[in-house]
Image (tube, rainbow, N blue to C red; front, side, top):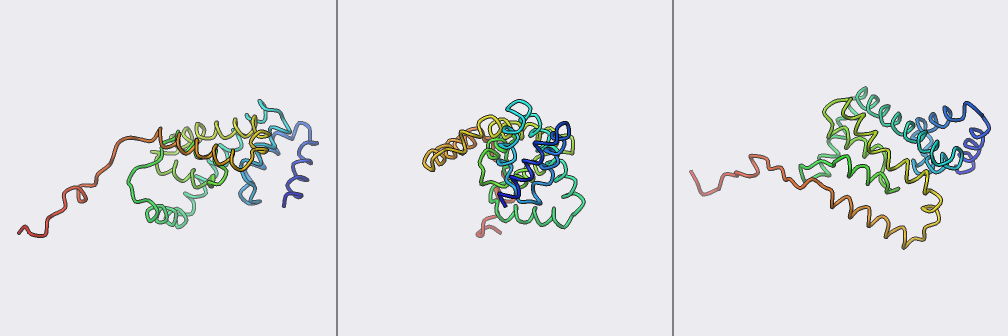
Length: 193
């Protein structure tokens, strides 16, 4: 798979003026080729440099998020299935904030579209989701495009320390309010009539 993706990205490099559009298309087709977002963003930095690569990666990840929103709305059974899976996994009623999603997107092991689903759940409408996705995708594109070479050569202990720091930051910026459901807070006692 890495040879095919290297050949595809090498071909994009030689397309001249069409290269940015083809690179953005790779972002859109990335889920179908099972390419990690991190790899595509790092490649954008190599092909176009840190500034242009970051801009193209932000555009590509935003369009990928918007396409996910539209596709998940077109297939209600898939959205319902995601909602039930999220309901079974989540014991708390709190939702992730945009800042938390932005930090979690920096961790390579967390699925990009799972975090997009969390943004859908916390958004009011499409416009709010688009704004949240744009803001959550910027750190991902900046870090993996500009510092991709550094992250690529991290040793395993250093990578674990980096992920631990990101998780700690995610914990520190959480919402500090707790939501109580009326039934859970005022449960009738067994002894009363």
